[in-house]
Length: 314
Image (tube, rainbow, N blue to C red):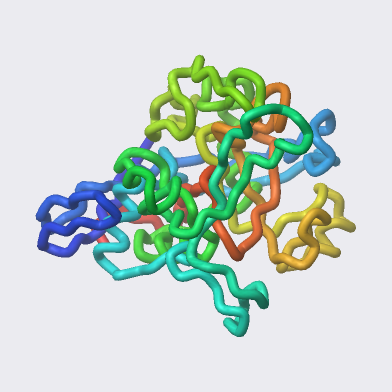
C-alpha cells in the first residue's frame, strides 16, 4: 500500500542541470511511499562475501520506503527550491572542517571501461573534474536524464534532500528487511552482462544506468532494490557483521581498504555488478562508500518512520 508525499515547488519555471521544470505551484515530482511491514530476519549471508558474514538475526519496525531511487527530476526540483549545491559541484579545500584534509577539485568518480583485460589496463575509475549530478559523465557529456537515478551524491547531499522531502536515509537493517522480505535475490535487474569490465552486452536492455522502475517491482512493490545503482544508507560501514567489527568501526565506520576515511554502508549492487565480478546484486550484499566524494554508480532512496509519516504536502 502506498501513500504519496507531494513536495512544494517554486511557482515559476526553471531550468536546473539541463532539466526544464514546468511552472507549477505543487510538485509533479512525487515521492511514492511504500509501507514496509515490521519483520525479523537473517541479516547477511553465511555463504556470501566476508563482509556479509556472520549472518545474524535482526529486526526492523514497520516503516516506509520510496518505491524507486530518487531521480534527477526530483533532485532538480529540490535544487530549484533551495539553491543547494552538491559536494561534487563544490569540491574540498584542504582546510575545510570535516573534510579529507586535502584539496579535491569539483568533480566525481566516473566509470570508464578499459580497452583490454591486461592487468596494467584494469583501472576502470577516473576522477573527472566537472562530473556531478547535472553532468554525470563530465562537463563534455550529456545532461542528466530526468528519469535516471541521481548519482554523484554524498551522504550529506542525500540528507539535505531528505530534510527537504520529509524523509531520511534508511538504515542497513531497514533496507535489507525490505529487500529480503520480498525475495529479491536473482530478480531481473540492471546489471552487467558480458565480460566485466570490458564489454557490457546490454542483454537486459541497458548499458549503463536505466530509468527507474524499468524492471518489475518486488513483492512489496519496490523497484530496483538490486542493480542499477548502489544505494546509500545511514549505517556506518563495518568489515563484517560481528560485534567486534561494530565496536571497532563506531560511528565513523571502518573499511580496511580506506582506513582513514569515514565510511557508510551502500546496498543493492549496481549496473556494474556481474556474475563473474562483484556478484553483489543481492539483498545481503554490502560495500563501503566514503563520505567525501560521490561516484557514477551510487544513488539513494528515502525512508521515513510510519508514526510520523503523512500524505499531506510539505
